[in-house]
Length: 160
Image (cartoon, rainbow, N blue to C red; front, side, top):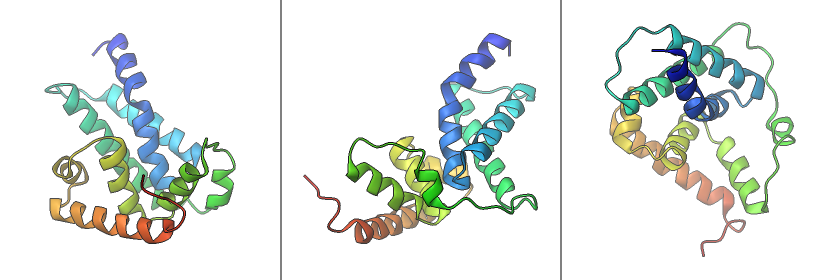
């Protein structure tokens, strides 16, 4: 891999890696660190990838692993409340902000499944493969996340 190829991949996938990391850490600084670690691992990796989809899956899998590693780190003592994180974000519509906060309040196993399914357009089987779990586990997580979001957003969000 040459520097030009690395730069192209880094620019193309850094946002996705950041969003995965942010779903776990809920902290912009930690998410930036995770992106840097993932891209550094990719740069140092001597692995031959089959295609671009294989690279994408590898990067997101490493992002999940790095995020989990950060959460169990002994240095991760300070937790930033969701209210402080939300102060940086600006939404066009109140419904978008309500949905964002409702999703961010979900347990991380539901947040990651929801993010990968709805925002990254991965199938249930692809998510299961990346997270190394059974596809039925992902289906159950998505179903439970939808139930939690439906009850939390009842009266706030209307289907049109």
